[in-house]
Amino acid sequence: MGGFSELIKKFDKTRDYIRDFFIYGFKVRNDFDLKSLRTYDDEKRRIESWFSDYIRYDRSERGQKVSITVDSGIISENPLYQAYYSKSFTNNDIKLHFFLLDVLHNGESLTLKEIVFRIDINYDEMFDVQTIRNKLKEYVKEGIVITEKKGKTAYFRLSPDRAEEFLYAYDGLTDAVKFFSETQEFGIVGNSLLKFAHLKNDLFVMKHNYIVHTLEDIIIPEIISAIENKRYVSFISFKSKSNKVKNVNQVVPLKIFSSLQTGRRYVVGYVPSIGCFHSFRLDFIKIVKTGDIFSEYDSIYEKFSQDLNYCFGVSFGSVNIETVVITFYIDEKNEKFVVNRLEREKRNGILEKIDDNLFRLTVKSFDSFEVMQWVKSFTGRVVSVTGDNKQAIDRFYSDINKMYKMYERGEQ
Image (cartoon, rainbow, N blue to C red):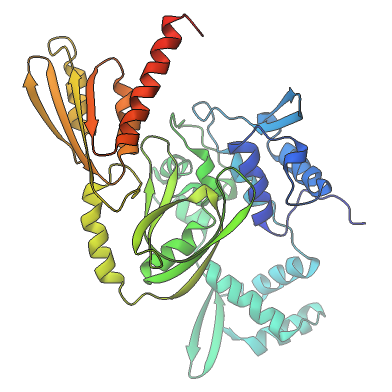
């Protein structure tokens, strides 16, 4: 029986467990039913090792619940990055890595046959030609090795770029890398550069740092590539909060959205089978597979750009445009900041003053529920709400009445 190791061969499975511990930290051991309990124990031990300072244990009637708890406002480095530094390598991977770097270290361009021959002569090691070809292909993709053709023959040479030279080439660049190492766009890349240079982010703390995005970064390049090349993708994704997976086929990705209300990220795409746009939560997506070119991409993107005018958040929940009208009472003399907030956050809505201290906001959108979630943040200033989607309006009034009764009775 193989022994336990903190290193992993594939990130997918570990990502699933980190996702459950971090996002849904209410599960007990028996809730993880996709794999064996032995697998759960191994993944739990890895996570406890990587995130020892952030593990929380709670007891319940159903058993012990393990969660990852992080106050992103007081950490200088995203602890979830640690999972990306735990990939295992075979002995041949390690040896071949250093053999290739040594053979190519002087900047000389060599053919595949020459590289194979020098490894054999210099180190008395015989590697299959296809193994070396695959490793070179991997390093070309990573930017470690540069390839160029002379006639029909491919030549390989080591890239002259060095991170340590780049970091110190310009004043303030290391500070910039420290800042962007905790942002969505640069994240793990910046953190890797800092580790390589034996530096730490000792300058910046992000108040609203959605560190869970780290778990989504592994699938984003595939989606962005599909957008750039106007291709279909298919998703293997989770069903809401369960571990059960489902396939979503033939989606044309158009843009990645980030919700201002929740911080969650979504990929918005066109679904040809139902002829409409739809948003998919990135933290629910397990695997992305790129498909064929979508011939109608330009016309669909033009329609998408038009429909964005009626997208209040990230949802295209209805094929019809719905109207919501909200009347607010705001003390103009003492609460001018509330009026300013309405102007700033109304998005595609139209704000009108209809009387002293009374303001009316009219919003046309595809999803009235998104509008109503935002309206709740003005509780105490809402006079009335009307709209086309009766269910959304009724839910709003029901929630307000429940809250009123709860506070009226003095419940906590």
